[in-house]
Image 1 (cartoon, helix red, strand yellow):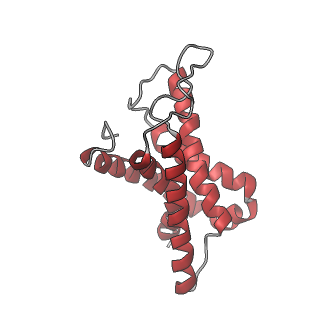
Image 2 (tube, rainbow, N blue to C red):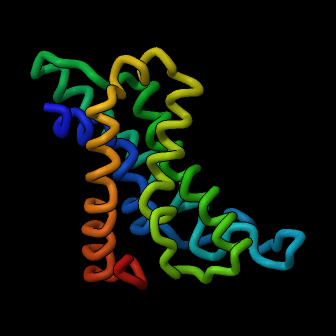
Amino acid sequence: MSLFIALWIMIPAYVPNSAAAVFGGGKPIDGGRNWKDGRRIFGEGKTWRGLFGGILSGIAAGILLIAIGYYAGFTIHTFLSVVLLATGALLGDLVKSFFKRRLDKKRGEEWLIADQYDLVAGSLLLVLIFNYNWAVINLTLPVLLWIIIITPLLHRGANIIGYLIGVKDVPW
């Protein structure tokens, strides 16, 4: 049951990364500007369309989960939890991209662990800060362990699919 709950909780956080790749393109969030180290702040791959398209997709997935849960007789998500998870996932990705640029890693270059857990760190941190009671009730130790186990597997699978359908340049 903890595996199911972990998946159910994290869907609004898992959807935005893939959706951002689909909706991405256009103006980069950093406007092409460099940080004081001379490197791009986030890079070409982080665009406003991708950010908003990803967040809105995660929220839409979460609203669907709320509706399904309502009719099935169980509730885990609230609108606030969904918004925080979806937004936090892509904010975590942005923070990771900032540090990736500082380490002179190129766009698409693999950064093990950080690439897989940036969305988890961002989404759970945002929920802990702004919806602490929800987090304490729902993010039990077994659920957190499942999130840690399934995230890299789902991340790799989604990236391979994205690569195969042409929305990602690399399969990681």
